[in-house]
Image 1 (cartoon, helix red, strand yellow):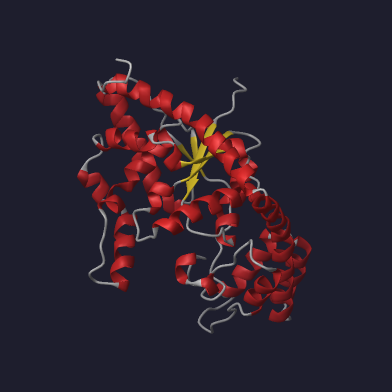
Image 2: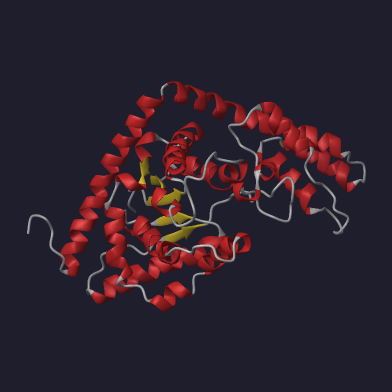
Amino acid sequence: MSDQKKNVLSCIQPTGDIHLGNYLGAIKNWVDLQEDYNCTYGVVDYHSMTMPYKAKNLRENTWKMALQLLACGIQPENLFIQSLIPEHSELCWILGNLCSFGRLNLMTQFKDKTSQLKESDKDAFVSGGLFYYPVLQAADILIYHADFVPIGKDQVQHLELSRDIAQRFNHQFDKEYFTHPEPLFTKNTKILSLANPAKKMSKSLGEKHYVNIFGDEARIRKQVKSAVTDTGESEGISPGVQNLFDLLLASGKIDDHTSLMNDFNNDALRYSDLKNAVAEGLVVLCKPMKERYDEINFNKKEFKNRIKDSSSDIRKSAKKTLREVKEIVGILNPKD
């Protein structure tokens, strides 16, 4: 049995500050996976271009996301910025010729995001990149020969596309070259909006709907204090109250969770006690990451250079893959 570590790849778009849903739903897991796998994590700024954006904000958010990932515990050597590795986009074009229009037309996220744009403006511009970006996502994964991709159930369709493209490539060129990446369904916590527990925590819903893990303590406490609990529409435990209990458990307050859940089961729970415990748990959870982020920001130039260096190192692997792919598909390499 080989002791060689398997490869894990996962990426995140730079959409501003990391919020609690990002951290508990994905990034905390990324940090833990570094112990047992060869991990490669990317800030995928090309993907952010598929939706309306401002150039200055994209550049600022890309660096902010990268530095915040370091503050959360991602090791610098495991982190890259997508636009610093142009091989991703070149491989995307090659793989796009192995993916049918009909297959892309089945992707539900394109329809969801198109509807989102049209809701705010029926004449909104919908870019071709929004339709085509699942192929770039496949290139992000396949270029590093990832064995596993940590995903949630809602991301299975995109990973299946990556697997289909890998299979078609291998079959068409009669060579088992690309790995068929497998989903890594590790334990994570789905965090709902504190203001609307019918929706997942998201920055797109507005500031009151997400908790910035690098925000100040007073704001975190205020947001939890104003969290929606019962809406009068559900029997048993409501989504809002369940979300607070989930947050309490995720923040490590196991004894408080047990005690307050016992109160709930005995119809003795005071929501103020639950909210106070959750607020305290989240403040304690976020404090070391906020302190680390402050340190990183103080030495921002140094850490930016480290991320540039790690992107350059990771690019070596991407270059090797692209060189081999070009050889297989009959495209000229610079030294041919």
